[in-house]
Length: 194
Ligand SMILES: C[S@@+](CC[C@H](N)C(=O)[O-])C[C@H]1O[C@@H](n2cnc3c(N)ncnc32)[C@H](O)[C@@H]1O
Image: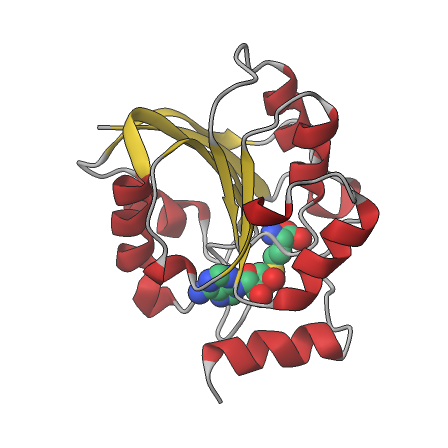
């Protein structure tokens, strides 16, 4: 089964246990502190994209939402009809091109095959302008998952991918305001692109 078919099946069968139903609180708190509402933002592997809805409703109008599955993009269009349709990108992240000031990570890195992790890092580096920021959350555990998705890893397991020569790490720490079931198990990261 292709990656696209796999995720399409998940969405069609409502197997979306990752879905919070709202913007993740640590990301909402981060958004609340962003000084410039004109920046160009990408949310890849966005699913229902509550963070995009949050951004849009807080005055950020240059927000792009990307998912390989069409259904969650349609869900966002139904919830927020005024969200620009041209900013809904039904694409494979690894084939996407463009330049962004900020990219938000939320349960996407753990959704992709671990073999694709270096490609993810390279793609993020390519999609961000120099000085652009990759910010968001990674769910970790004391042991790496034997199988996935989700391909949960340990704190150190994630650390070794995000500390690299492509980014300057501003924050890579346990998130303070995670939802209760994820409390103490989420890394909040903020990385500046070289
Ligand atoms: C675990 S879900 C997370 C969704 C959302 N970020 C959230 O936290 O609710 C992963 C999402 O990534 C999408 N996805 C998986 N592989 C992708 C790829 N290569 N390119 C774009 N989207 C992808 C899936 O369709 C799915 O909606």
